[in-house]
Structure formats: C-alpha cells, structure tokens
Length: 247
Image (cartoon, rainbow, N blue to C red; front, side, top):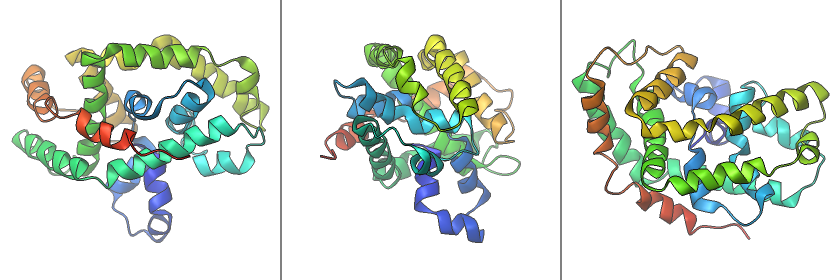
C-alpha cells in the first residue's frame, strides 16, 4: 500500500538498477491507503493508529527521508507507535503479495488500454497500482464514511509533545507538525467520494511522478468502469489482512 513496502522488499534491486522505473516510482509516489490501513488494524490506542498511518505521512512530507531513516534516529521508544508502524508494513506485504492486487491491477490495465494509456508516455504498472489503492479508499469513504471520520478524529487527538519526540531534527519536527496539521484539517481523503476530486487526486499523484495526467476523456464513464472492478469485493482483501495481527 505504500512506497515503504517496495523499498523494504527490493532495496538491493533498486541499488543494482534491476527494478523498472515503474517500480521505482511506486517507492516515491504511491499515495496510499490511509483509510484502508486504519480500517484493517486500528485499535483503541491513538499512538498505535498514528503509527499505522505514519509511513505514508512521512513519505508525502519528505520523499528523501525514508522510514528506515526514521527508525534509526527515533529515540522516543513509544511501543504503540512502533507496533503501529509494524502493522503498516505487515499490511503492505500482504496486500502486494495477494491475488486480489494482481488480478485487479490487471483488470485496471485493460481499462487503461481502452484509452491508449497502456503504452508510453504512460506507465501502466504505476497507474494501475495508484488507481487501485485510491479506489479502495474511495469505496470505504463512499460506503463507510465513519471509518474515515474516526481516523481523522484519532489523529486530531495526537498532542504536541508526542509529535515533538518523533525526530531529532528541530527543523524536520516543525516541518512535520505543519504538514500534519494541514493533513488533519483538510481531511482530503473524504473528497474521494466525488468523481471529480477522485480524478483530481489521481492526476496530482501522477504529476508528482512526472507522469502525464489522464487524457481528456469522459471522466464519469472512466470512473464508473474502474469502480465496477472493486465495488462488490473491495472489503475482501482488507478483511483478510485485518485478521493478521502482530502480538
């Protein structure tokens, strides 16, 4: 579900140049399923829930400062935060290795091919990955909006003292605090319920990866086509992941 999964699974491959550009783009630009992570593993511990989402928050704030960098420098020792991060990584591994991910990205690829987006300058692997992950959050927001609202309420409860203990760099600490405050206040994942805003979010992510925007097509039809691929079973992989826990 995030850039950190690919970095952790294929670090040597990236170093040797054995991964495709598309795989490398996932490392830096994937958006992530904030709501899906929360749905799968949230607990009655807001520091744990913050940890569930933190790898993706960190990836958006600073693409150069990786989760491994954070883990090496973190001195706070909050076990709930660290356990939440571990569950994030667990979910990523299960998600990317699952049949659902493989089959659904293949189906999204077929839809992209209808619009000529299965060849350069488009990067279909990257696009399918991003579209599927945002689709999952979109359908959680459409059908279970309280999950997203609860997620933001939990994040709102995180206090200044906790945030101040995340980084050993005062500058990075202040940057993260500002970013986190905006993220919580904007609640942008709720906008995925709108077709227009969903496509806007996709294009923003594509832009970050130097990827062309979706072409000028009938957006309503396009969104309907990809919605149909997950609407009946989007909870199936999430419920399977939710049953796997770290003690």
